[in-house]
Each structure stands twice: as C-alpha cells, then as structure tokens.
Length: 409
Length: 84
Image 1 (cartoon, chains in turn purple, yellow):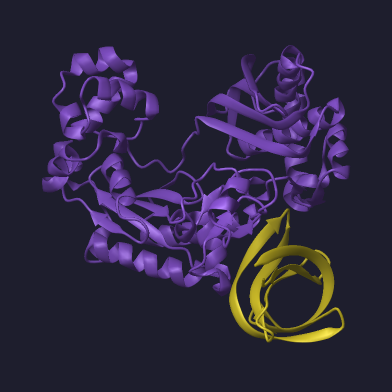
Image 2 (image 1 turned 60 degrees about the horizontal axis):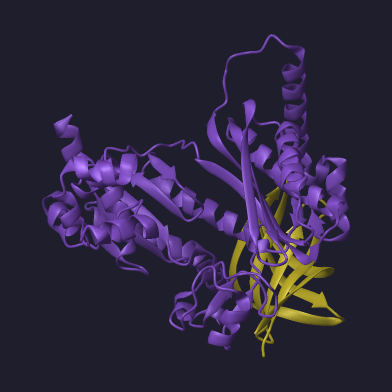
C-alpha cells in the first residue's frame, strides 16, 4: 500500500477560460482581444466565461453582461454554442486517452489522468504535459494548464497556480513545503463561509490548518473539517475513477422576457426535466431528490426540494415532483425570469428487477424513446407540453436553443 | 465585432477526399466568396446524423462558419462575424 502511494502520479488538466479559448482558437480575429461568452452586450444575462484579456479589464464570471460592457466596451460578446464546446471537449478527451487509459473527466474542460503507469513512455511528466498541450493547441486552439502531483488534490491546486498555459510539477519531497505556504482557500472545499471560520481561528495558510488538532478541525467544521485537515496534511487517497457519479445534475434557463404564462413556465420546466432524465439514463444513473428553483422578475429567488419514493430516471416521474413543488411554491404574483431543475442523491441504476408491471413498462418506453432520439435527435419525441416553447425558441434536431445558448445542452 | 446567426442554405463548392470534405468557395447573397483560410472544424452529432461545422476566413477577410448537414446533404451559412 505504501509502495503504491509513493508511485502514484496524477496529472490534472484544466482548459484556460475554456469557452472563450475555443472561440479564439477557431477565429483568428478574436485572438488577443477581450472575449466574453454568455450573451450579447445588450442582452440580459451574465458572463459565463471571459478570456484572459477580458479578465484584465476586471470582467469576472457571473457578472451581468451590461456591467461587463461598461467595464470593457471593446470586448467581443458571444452567445456561445454548447455543441461546439462539447465537440472540442471530445477532441481533448481523445488526446488524453492516447496518453493513458485511466482518465477521469470531471467536466468538458477538466480531467484527471493517472499517469503512474504510462509516464515512463514519455520520459518525464513535464514532457508528457508539453506534448498534450502542443497537440491540444494544434487541434483545437485551446490552451491548457497542468498540475502534476502525488494526489488529485495536489495536482488540482498546482494546475490553478500558473494559468494560462502553466505546467506545475510538485514532486513528492516538495509536497509538504508546497502546501505549507499556500493560502488556505486553495484547498478544495474552502468556500467563503469556511474561510471566515478559519480566519476567526487565525488560520490563513494550509500549514496552519495542518498543525491544528484534528478534533478541533472536526468540531469547528464537522465532517468537512476532517476532510480539510487530511488534505492540509497531504492525505488524499481518492483514485482516478473512469466513471464518476455526479453529485448533482441541473439545467437552468432564463426567459427572453419575464413571463407569468403557466403553460410556458411548466413547458420550460418539463423540457429541462427531460434533458436531465436523458442524461441520467445515458449514464445508467437514477436520482432520488428533485429540486426546483424560480427566479422572479423582482430578482428574488425561491428554491425547494423533495425526495421521490424511490430513485428514478423517468422524465415523467421526475416532472411529477417538479410540478408538485411548483404548486407549493408559486404563491407570489410576480412574473418569472429564470427557472431551474436539479436532481441530487444520484446513484448507479439498480440492477434489481421489479415485480410490478408499471415500472417495467416505463423502462421499456424510455429505452424506446432513447433509441429514437439516438437515431433522429432529441426533438424526435417530446412531451406535448414542451411544444409550447416552439413559439419562443428556435430549435434544431438536438433541442431548443435557449436564451443562454452557451449553456444549452 | 459582432456575431450574427444566419442558418441560410447556400451553395458550396466542396472537395471530397478520403472521407474528408473541405469547402473551397461558397455563394451567398449572389456573391461568390473564395475561402482563404480554414481555422478549424468540428462535428455536432444529432441522433445518427452529423453536422460538420467549418470555421473559415473568406477572401474579404470575413470570418464565416459553414455547416454541412449529412441528413439532407445541404450546406448552410451558420454564422458570420461582422467587423465594427
């Protein structure tokens, strides 16, 4: 076991400002210019990704587009095209898999590679990283940053320190020194609230967190405290998993105009639910808890979640819960600007069969629907209520092109 | 600089070789554009069909995104980037 942990070598690859980088990679006129992906300048919505040139003007992810335009009037605003980003993500995936079969794809633009068994084929991990970076830039124009270390945590932290196009290799003998001086917010899981608690304890660096008695960390921050304490001490035994069960799958969209039209709202919610259900079935997963989020025209927000009796990947069943939650929440007489559906408590679909006819029929129906969509596109079979959206959004065989196309998946 | 979605059918002179296709010239709004530079291409799978997207630069230096849909063997001009 100790032998294994010494030879473990993990590479974390993170694409730099991915969506903006894809746009710059495929259009030379955009190179060197501030690029903002998320919507047009006058459109309402927020910045999804900003290129490094735009970041230099103070643009940040999540900033309203109108504010971004004021801060950086010469920026190029792009709505974005998720299908394009997904295709580029696929190309990156193919490149990584040529270097090792043990790859964990955590999103379109970042991945962990277990290179312990393949690094000797390339001489050194840094050379391997340079080769991957060169190949990715040649094929897609996207720039990548790399972190290499003995654990996923070290690799992840290292990849974020020298962006864009950085390669950081933290050797096992330097890991402790590397962590000691690092600001504590670099540890995964340290958000604003946790940081505030740690600052109260006068803990500013990972080194200070590491020398904290384990019990104090646990008492102050609960289960997360123990995980953080372990990480601060360089303990992270998480393996690179080829299949990862996500904690949450969510789909959200804003309406082009605030609306009080129940049919449009429910149609939108059902469409988002169908997309989630398809993703669950594609990956052989099911989910138990369903969440609904509403954003009102007065910028207030409401969210509620409830668990199903049993985990499901059936769009109609999940939407039944969404509709129930909507009925519980829709008390405010204010138009709606934003809707979102999420599922949590996701697990691998149970292989155990059922004695009852109903669920078996539903599964057979869903697999027939999936097959039709596989062949003819997502829009080949749609619940009737979602057709309400046809008058509001342009669609192709792949689905509706929603208000924020960068996120339309 | 502004991007505009067009998605209009167009005529394209294309070179097919060894399973690859490459647009050479296209006609849009009555004018023929020669493709000066290929910036890249990607494939968008839609069910069993594929859409081939090409990011190209026309001879007037405009950036254009062309799309070939193998469902109906039709070319479209998907997006243009307007300077200014």
